Image 1 (tube, helix red, strand yellow):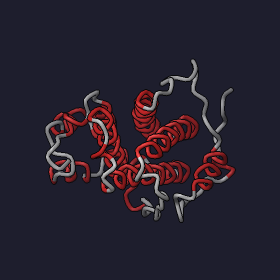
Image 2 (cartoon, helix red, strand yellow):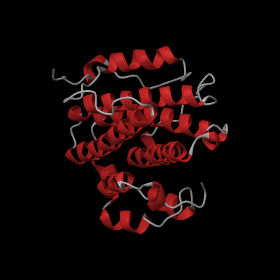
Image 3 (cartoon, rainbow, N blue to C red):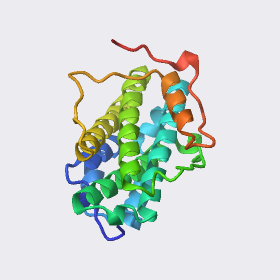
Image 4 (cartoon, rainbow, N blue to C red):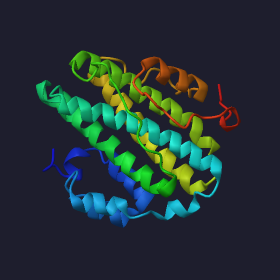
Length: 232
């Protein structure tokens, strides 16, 4: 993994699009050849983007803090699966998928943390209860996780007040939606279940995450007054 570049792992350009939305096209182009996990990529992402100055409204901060916790959850899940050797035992196409999504989620964590700055929360402790050690359990969990993240972002993005942050959130949403479709395809599930995606109320997302018992401390929780209005 350490010698793979962003361009190699980001075959469809989804992650580079997210970086371009948050940091600008010039920086995204410069990072195209950067090594994943290398100092060039991490140093470039560590530079605070212009959007950080827009995050003055407390509601936006809380939403991005909540999104960060989900990115922590996903990044930790994929990273632990790689470290457990489960990815190395997969067939090539599936291994590429798992490594690509893991790299994306780790980059998402880095990006959101830098958008939040001092308001970024620390990662909770996760216990995936063996789901990272079995290919079949990992795959089922990955599908559910990507679907849930897409539903969450679909629901909370319209409640953001900063237009710049709305654009940033939508760029993350489109990448997560591609992740979900890719995961479903490899799992033998119809990639697109229907003509419209349905968002999930944050209360339901909280309940689902709590039921997995993966996160020992998942904070901050969304409050009732932060819940957006949902369509359909």
